Amino acid sequence: MNNADLIQRDLAAIWHPCSQMKDHEWLPMTPIKRGEGVWLEDFDGNRYIDAISSWWVNIFGHANPRINAALREQMESLEHVILSGFTHQAAIELAERLIKLTPAGLNRCFYSDNGSSAVEVALKMSFHYWHNSGQHKKQRFINLSNSYHGETLGALAMGDVALYKETYGALLLEPITVPSPDSFYRDAGESEEAYSRRMFVYMEQTLEQHADQVCAVIVEPLIQCAGNMRMYHPVYLELLREACDRHNVHLIADEVAVGFGRSGTLFACEQANITPDFMCLSKGLTGGYLPLSVTMTTDNIYEAFYDDYDTLKAFLHSHSYTGNALACRAALATLDIFEQDNVIENNRALASYMKQATAHFTDHPHVAEVRQTGMVLAIEMVEDKVTRKPYPWQERRGLTVYRHALKHQVLLRPLGNVTYFMPPYVINTDEIDLITEVAWQGIQLACE
Image (cartoon, rainbow, N blue to C red; front, top):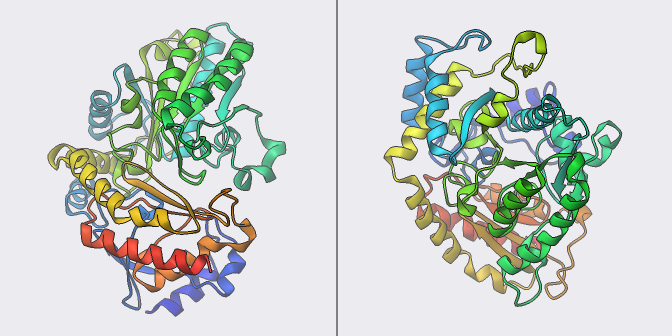
């Protein structure tokens, strides 16, 4: 069996995500045979560093021995059971541990099976809470420009990236969109904190005007990942928490991409010392092994649904694989690694090394910015460095970086003209050096 055989069979049967399938007439698919640590290997023996953690999910490497062992043990006793009227040990233990690890006050866990679903749950819970509380005018949501929260219709509506959303506009809710505190647009000499404070004026004005009809504000804390890895200062979250309290509006923190150590702390909200009303978690939760997500919320919100059956206040939302035992066990093994391996401190050292390794990118004539939050580092290519005029998206210059990287043992998958590093936490400095060198070469080619 080789790459060519598998590519032919694949293209005859599979419709791939986030892809223009016609591209594969000239852009070969890459069939993967096995993975180990940060490395992937195809059927022709080529190897690739997974520098993007396979869409940001794999945090402790492929075929991690400890997660493998936990799954083998769980498979021998229980693979799955309905979570309505039934429960199991792994789901209980995971909820207990998440409650201890997340910001104080998030005492209830509602399981689903992907990040979009976790966001859908938060949106529905918030709306339903106000409905159960008799505040029926509260039916809208506030989001940030350039945000992304998933692909299912409710989550998609809360995003603001036209590439994903525009086609489906007729099907979607209409949020109230507030300008993002994205630090890329700060004035010369202006600090990220000062810019976030300045941009918060728009949120304050919007809340003052619309709070009586708004259920919640939804944000991606610190990093707008699908929105070209744009970043902002934690002070914005501090100001937002206070304003939401003052205006009687919920705060939804979508930590699907930034949770579990990616931002430099276990959860990004820690850097602002806030507790949201809802926290959405997925991706790294199971170490990249299995689909699982959690929407965490407060006792106050839980109690608004707790009543006699005939009041019809229950939250009647479900997924067939809710709280899957194998996924919960993988998540528990992932939390064990965080607990036993001093991961957050080690990540800080790795993040510092990535920063040093890529410092010279700022001198490139077509790099507008190198930005970093924790274990996420982004390099933005532009046509004009002075004005920050972007390259036309139709030129697909990021694709040049992607193709070059695959030829040189690295999986990089730029977002438009933004090349980013989001590697598993088990990467070493030699491997960081390799992805840095390959990214530099790719950007040189892309900017010719």
